[in-house]
Length: 251
Image 1 (cartoon, rainbow, N blue to C red):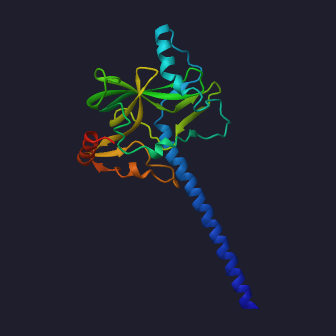
Image 2 (cartoon, helix red, strand yellow; image 1 turned 180 degrees about the vertical axis):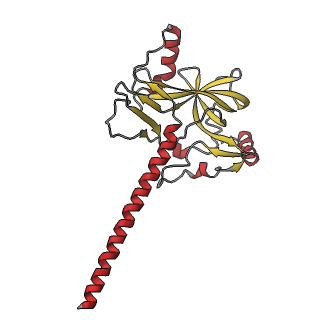
């Protein structure tokens, strides 16, 4: 009888320990997700929901043309006080090749010199526009030329400050955020509605290596996209060789 009591006591203790470990693991995973998202949020550019639009008619028309494609996509609205960052999942990222040469209208190498978030014309979407100082053009077409030393590129997402003072972050899952002052190889698609490019994907060049902008460094528990992860920390020379090979034989 005494032995049964000891066994029962041990079983209860083991179960309690297992529950505690499971709870700690869940808490750690949640903390990891929050920390990964926080790092991403810290890189987002911000815009005030009540910020006045351009006063100049030409600039207003230009901004409306550039932002129209983002209307409704992120459903920007005053969030609940306890809401976290809001995101959308674009399944096309999972099927995008690591080096989307054929899908790109332009491929450039350069430094991000400025980032500014904007609301779409109907204020239901938010996107960030980056200025790139182009050092090298690897691909361009007559329909989408890269003019001059600077080019504007866009990516969905940003931070919105609402009249209540609440700041809400909007992101796209699997997509990273370029950082001002860093150098990238960018694969670009022309925005047919305006004289600007959309970032398909990109690679940061740092300390002689490349780091994918997308598909890696995800919240804990999320699987990295293998086509991008394959180039994580790869030497610039190897990456450049693969890219030039892809340019010579685009699929």
